[in-house]
Length: 62
Image 1 (cartoon, rainbow, N blue to C red):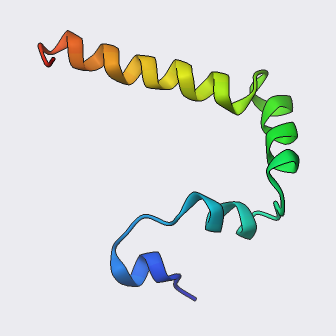
Image 2 (tube, rainbow, N blue to C red; image 1 turned 120 degrees about the horizontal axis):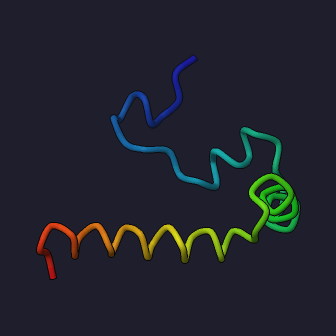
Image 3 (cartoon, rainbow, N blue to C red; image 1 turned 180 degrees about the horizontal axis):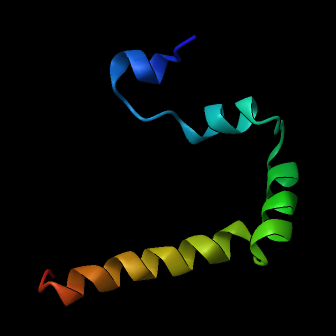
């Protein structure tokens, strides 16, 4: 069965993906994320966002 995102060509919402994977609250997802990634989701996002910004600087975007 195809999801709505496949029919519309849009990316799925993160909340929809979390529910499909069995997560029903943010605390559950955050605990498991921390155990797998070794850091909280907020730290991982901050580091990834910094890297995305750095890539723009590398190609001369400001």
